[in-house]
Image (cartoon, rainbow, N blue to C red; front, side, top):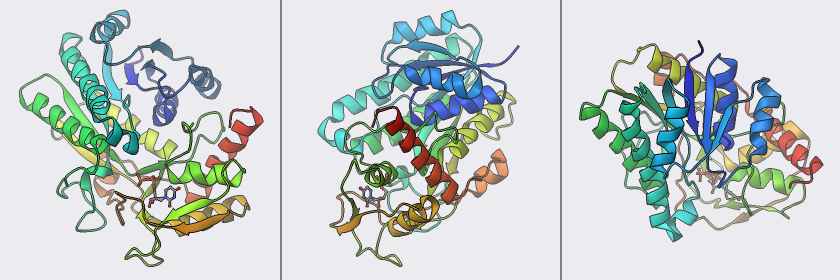
Length: 344
Ligand code: UDP
């Protein structure tokens, strides 16, 4: 029988790509999502890509009794990948309690239910935001955790601690914390991708919406940073590559290959790209000229960060594979499909 995996937030951007990769690796997936930032159509699109329809339960992870019911309805769930969370940095500053409640209580509910249903482990979506501006680059998992810049970032740090404390207390579970760098791109089929809510806050969604004419021009936030071209540097990771990291993390848990009951891995390419380099790579990959201007720095931005992914490369046997050109082309094809469907 196929191992059954619960994916919370499975209709979201990273979640949906991960569901497909899990299915293609032979897992049976149950999705829980409250559709607060995604739509039920995504379930159809997952099926169109993989040929397999995942089980889907529309449910908020704050609903403890509802979650209990999901575990009872789908017996034998072996592990959880927990994506469901609020993720807009700016909004979290405006509505901290919403963020603390959503992101922290959801995790607590899952951790409380895991022993009852003999769920072996959990893969948690963490973020390189926990490093703040690292003192040394590339940043390793050993780098100190810096004070969070936003309630959103703080929920990632607190959730990592909650998982560590729960495992340390003797709960019969294990965990893998994946610290994502900057996920971008879409499924090569153009059936799955990122659907920003309103004006995009993230760079690549803003670029593709500018290229297609929804936005007039991209503002590059700051060109006076201490970087070679003055713009910020990030480690942009292809979303399908990122999804595959979750699949290997799940098999590491289920095959009991973990060296420690809580492991943490950086999930990035190991290469930093500046905003300007990314813009030029987009133009080269797509042949579309991008309208952009230099603008003041954005509050709270880190100057530069990129991953040392050696640990993930060696222990998980995972490596980012897709080129930045292919990744940006996939984001562009996704935007073209949204236009074709009259969505955006
Ligand atoms: N950025 C930009 N213009 C935009 C959106 C983002 O210049 O319209 C820059 C931003 O300042 C940062 C980089 O692009 O240096 C990546 O930003 P994003 O919000 O995508 O990710 P994060 O800030 O979480 O790294």
